[in-house]
Image: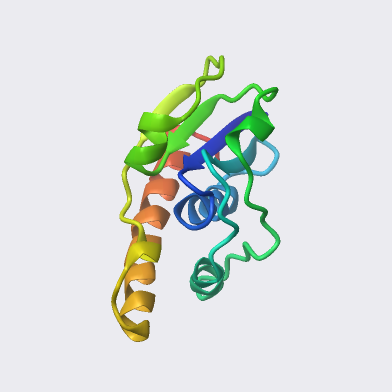
Length: 140
């Protein structure tokens, strides 16, 4: 079993979407996916809505702090924002680390319809990244 940790600032949006897609694309007998933040902000309701549009249910996910997973041996750690990469507290791991800075749609100052479109754009970026990650690492 391979353990994957997706790490973001608040574990509310980008890491939650990546968690959903990695779990969706991976073989559940080969992979356990976790997501966390260097802080916890609760799950963004728009992330839940936008993922549901693509038949991925993240409504039961919880917002977790990276410290909650200190005792888990991870094979892969994926940071999905520069802030998490730069400010993550160190914990000993032999995990292979990956980084991709996705835009934060929750920081948008656009009107409601445009915000949803920004979430969709980021969702598609994350979806493509996660699918490629699973295939490249033969976790499907």
